[in-house]
Length: 75
Image (cartoon, rainbow, N blue to C red; front, side, top):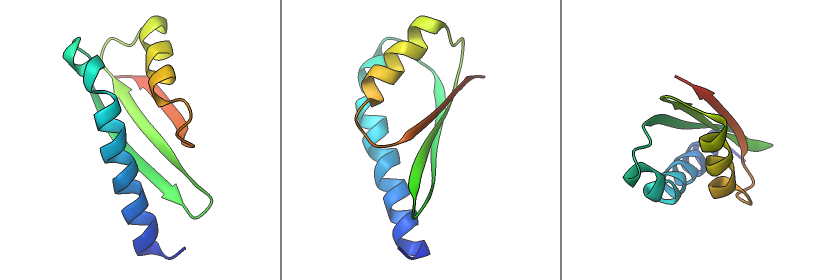
């Protein structure tokens, strides 16, 4: 996979992730999100304000099955 395809895949994963997180945003979730990737796979990075174990679990459930590694930390 060449660099331009990796970049397009990263952007597609970012957009899809934003859509999946819409309900949590409506509930007050504040975060910064970006995706990095290589031909071997993508990582979804999130920096979440006031991250607690319950919210980390909810985010994980929303993102489950997407084929992305998750990097979720408090901001």
